[in-house]
Each structure stands twice: as structure tokens, then as C-alpha cells.
Image (cartoon, rainbow, N blue to C red):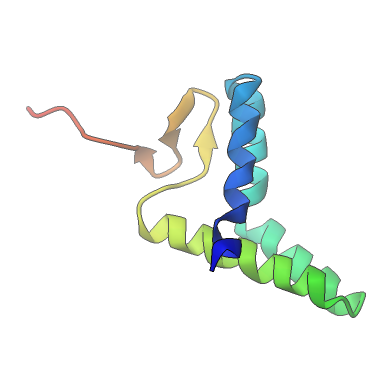
Length: 90
């Protein structure tokens, strides 16, 4: 169960700056990267790579269901799906 949260290690890039954080976060949360890792695992007959691909894909899908998207360079709260958090009341 804890393995599903391991892609969040990509957030550590934000300790350096917003740009590095967005790049590392997106690398660990991009579904195409997950699929490529899984296919590479099949090609290499590596169950570990296949599992890593499944975990990355599952985590990214779970994040999208909860409204979290790939990060922009503006900061952690800004994603390709829009801003995270409460929107101002108008």
C-alpha cells in the first residue's frame, strides 16, 4: 500500500526551486513516462520495472481523479488542470 505514494518523492525538487520542483514532480507523475517504464520492463523481462511503471501510472491516475495535475513553473499550487485549493468567492 505504501508503494502507491512513492512517486510523491518527486516533490523534493521543490526544495531547490520552483522550476526544478515542477520538472521532478512531473517526471514522477507523467503517464507517458509510466507507460514507457512498463514497456521497457516487458522488453527487459524485469518485473521490478514493470511494477514501477504500474505504480507510477496508478499514482498519476489517482492524482488526476483528485484534481491534481502536472505542475507549472509558477509554483506547486498551479497545475495543467488549474489552481489547487480554495478558489476565491465572487
